[in-house]
Structures are given as structure tokens and as C-alpha cells.
Image 1: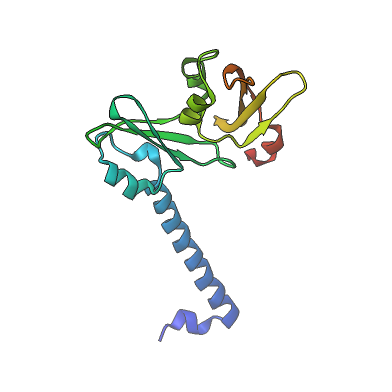
Image 2: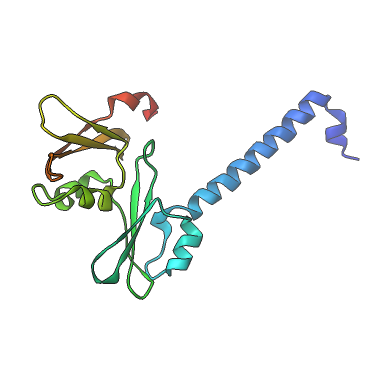
Length: 178
């Protein structure tokens, strides 16, 4: 007989059991989150290992030279899009979190990219809008820069070509910062 549990009032013992269960669930959830974190995937992992660890990608894209891109997006509410590139031999050759402000200038090709290039790199946007001052649409993604919630806006003209991009604060979600 457990003397500690038996001496506690029924409600208090139940509360402790519930708290222990909650802690156990949190630990399991954290471990599952680590297993599905693309940044922890080692270079050279097989396609099968990648799918086992990360699950079904949100999108797949064929690239040059037989490379396949497995895209894992946490959009629309999330702030990460990871691209895992698998070579023709079935091994991971690249793994990159794309929604990183430091990469935008080297990645986005104004006047060269099409909608397909944007989707292949950033996945589906959380929002597509028309604005009065632009003849086309603006695709937007949420991302995080340190503790700031930010937005990447890519402008796509009626022919489907990227004409410009810019970043700005995500004022709709500033309350989530803390």
C-alpha cells in the first residue's frame, strides 16, 4: 500500500497523478518534436530514413540531375520551411531552413523567378493578396528573426514572374512574441 497516496485527500492525489501524466506527455511530445526536426537530419541519410524521421513531406519537387526536393512546411501558421534535397542515389545532399532573412538576398531571383520557383523554395504562402498599388499578387510567408515575428512578401506580376520582394514585421501576431 502506498502510504503517501493513501494519506492524501482524493482530490490532491488525483491532481498529482494528472500532473505526472501531463509531464510525461510533455516529455514524449518534446522527444517526438526532436525526431521530426529537419535540422537534425544527418547528411547522407537515405530517403527512407528521412521519411521515417520526418514523415510525409508537405510537397515534393523534381530538381536538376535527378535530385528530388522533399519540402517540410509548418505554414500557414508556422515560421519554418525546410527543404531536404535527395540525390539520384537516394541520399540527403542538402537540408536547409529557407525562411531565414540572411538568405533572402542570395536566394530570391527578381525578374528571373516564376511562381514555380517560389513554390519550390518556400512552399505555399500563408496569404495571397492583391494591393491597389501593384498589378499582380503579393505572396506572404511568416518567419522568425531572433524573437521578432516577420513577414516575407514576394510580388508576382500577371505573367507569373517575381518582380520584387521585401520583409516587414508581422503586426498581426506580435502578441505571440512572448
